[in-house]
Image 1 (cartoon, rainbow, N blue to C red):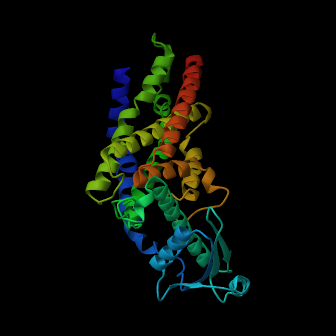
Image 2 (image 1 turned 120 degrees about the vertical axis):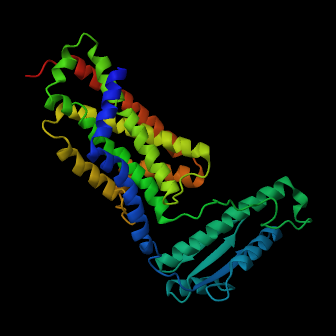
Image 3 (image 1 turned 135 degrees about the vertical axis):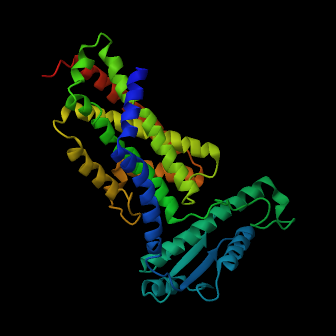
Length: 368
């Protein structure tokens, strides 16, 4: 088995096309896309002035103080203007006529926030974002007051020791975006390597040597697949290291997260190779001609080459889109939930496809 693994690795490194396509090309794309398209990473539309009427209907003095404190914090003399209204219905009519941006009603116990929107979707989303920020802050303050009832007496404010804004620690750029998506690209492109695993044996008429060897066919099959692993590890390592050292790309902020990111992409690559090997049993001729367009279209509509591409009802169901989301979630926020799912699904797919492939290869007869 070890000899077969070494043979596959040497053949991969010996082929100059492989060295360029699987090792250098993704790195070059990170540089080109990350720098040439960085100027396109701008807001599609300016928000403009936000004029918001609000009314407070609560008997809770602490809640009223929290609301007024939040409004005074976010209010801007030129762009964000909050104005208290006594005529709620009249303000609603003004919002419907686009005379103001929106009306916000703070009411009830526990406190509820009701937003009456205008017709400008961009401004509506901005108002929702502002109010969501208030809701999260209010939850934090309520928790503090329940835990430490005398906190107001000590004049602890929202920016104090009990509520701290999480710092992501890294200023992200388009280079970082493509550093992740190009890793996804090379992992999914590895299906082509898997599909070609036994093509060389057929072309060189050495496939029958494997079929008639006294060793178990299933072991030989696994050796052929495992022979692709060293080059897979080499691909991911080179891409990540070059992107970080040469292009100053950022992946995760900690060594542990980066190692898990590497492990996740390794599992994805192993799953795609396994699928490719299985496809190679059924596709006659050159499987690249069939698989390449499918994989390329999947990557295109998944935002691999441009973050602006998102097709509602299609993109979210693409496997590579989910893998990319998991990678960004892990890299930016250090969240493992989606990455764990990718590892679990990838491992299951690998086990199933390799089991089927080993069974089919074990039943395979000599070729003429």
